[in-house]
Length: 344
Image (cartoon, rainbow, N blue to C red):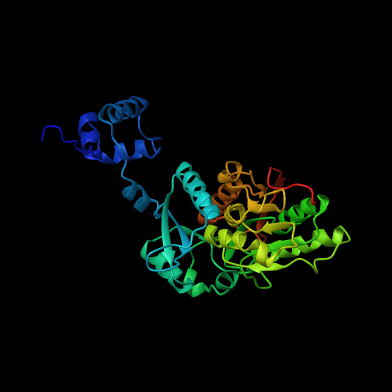
């Protein structure tokens, strides 16, 4: 039909080149040792002229691989996924890295970890990345759930031998944040973040926060803990009620940038000057941190590195490589901007 693009097949190429379909397949897949140089050149020229594109599904079937990697995230409800701004940035980088390595990304929300096995089997995934799950959920994963499919967990401290991991140095990041505030003379510093157990990202950041006080010869006895979910809205609410709940505090360390940004907005709405009255430090170094007013002092994670290493580690496992005994821990750094100032 005029104007309709017709798909070029191996048979079309074979007929135009005067060779068998098997010969064309061998040339395409680099198995041309028994094919004459003239034939290889002729086949490749016709492929270019006809605009032939190999079938991804056929190549996957031949290699006994789907070329699909699942990125599994918690489903907050039937209508939404539990994805933070930090994790959105991670997802974008993971997709980019997988694309470069010839793989496709399948994003899947699961209500609980019992659904992970179903996702792995129903989509014939070559491997899976877990992002945003609680450490106790990852720790509970069993072989009957994961099968032989390689699984990698990002930002996890769960010692599950079925998974490998990549995470940031959360302890050092929080220690740097608190040390920065302490160096500015702040002593009553609010620690704001989600509730935490004895294992996990937030727990490590709390330990790092405490370590900075210990190293400075100071005490956290006068440092309140604000437990709240990591959302911009919760940050705004905390900032609005700051003068009522923490009138003597001169600084706050939020365990995520999106929370810190909300706190700054709420404080400004309540007439609290940042950093004049209260200094604010976040964690992540999201792009938006450099565009708000005042610009956010924060702990920078290597988001590109985290995604790149996660993909490369997982693909090594998919290719039959050994599972690393220990997680890969990436360095962090303090980025000082306008939201912190000396205590007055």
